[in-house]
Length: 109
Length: 116
Image (cartoon, rainbow over all chains, first blue to last red; front, side):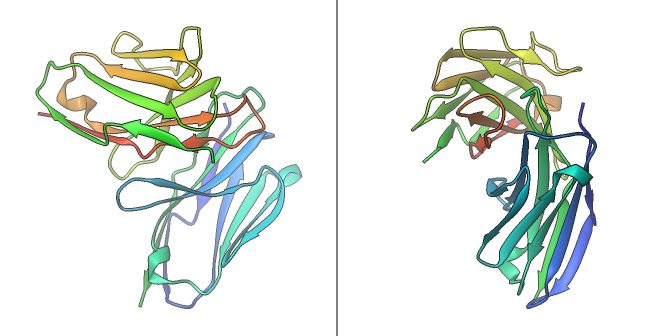
């Protein structure tokens, strides 16, 4: 099946800084999603982005499908951005999402 | 739109008990639903794919007799953990999509299962 790798595993930043999270995947995808998991376990869907670029407020994401990677950008970080960010991908067979191991982001005041 | 409701959100029960978790798509029909499991400080792992009106497809290493999945309608899938033991304690979360492939998956809020 498809492999998904995220980097960095941990990231500590000061409030106001910008950050870039990376997701590499091993095969072509029909689905790629970025999530933020809050302390209660809820998965907050940030982007559905199998290709192209999208923006939502301070967050934006870009997926370059031909080079098999996706980037999540967080600008002007706030303490509420802290948490675990997951990238998940699904190949052509609609076999369910394969999650990366996540990036644990800590924004310090 | 695309709301998925999962119930219960939290269960504590004794070893040997069977526990049923429900996953409902509230405002769309889901031909396919997925069940994932997450152990503490780990990522989510796909357990099984649930297709309406047919048998579920289980991932390698997931016991189908232990984790019974029923997808009786286009809006409801259930996961039953049979004769649960402490090692089954985990966070279980479901997702649904409108159609297979090329659509985002929408997730429920998860069920935290603790077996004493």
